Length: 210
Image (cartoon, rainbow, N blue to C red):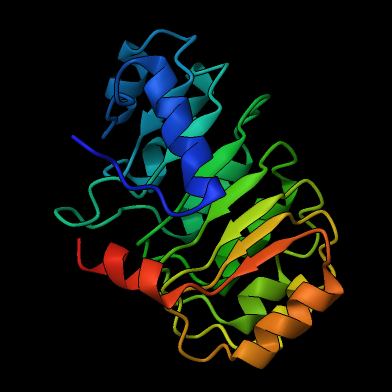
């Protein structure tokens, strides 16, 4: 089977999964989490409810946490309350947090991510309730290197002015954001010359048809 990877950000995630030799286990309850070896480094948690998120503290070496996988068949359970619970888990190594297609997350919930100092890769793909105000809440995430906002219809050029203050960013994905203009992309690229700012509508079209 051929896997078509369209961005460095996705390439890193796929490479991490391939190196494990298997897809991450799925957890849908605190019981599922506790059954895993404490050294498990990656999990898929789309079906994990807010009240069971604190159980993730059992996974001391977790570095990849995916609430996106399975979006086509299952609605995500995590909400703003779940993000608050997530921010209170003492993760030591969590590097990649994927919140794609989590439509119960709002701008207010994003304030909880600020304290997650180890996260470098964040996906908010198709989080349709995220607006420019939510993006302003991310500006204190000084460790963030990559941000995926593809398919976020409420993100606009105004929101990009907030991202322009995030000088540690090295990649921003904006395909499928109809209210972000090419001019806005260019201005963000100018403000962050070390960052790769991409609004690839062809790549997004390919993804959204899958």
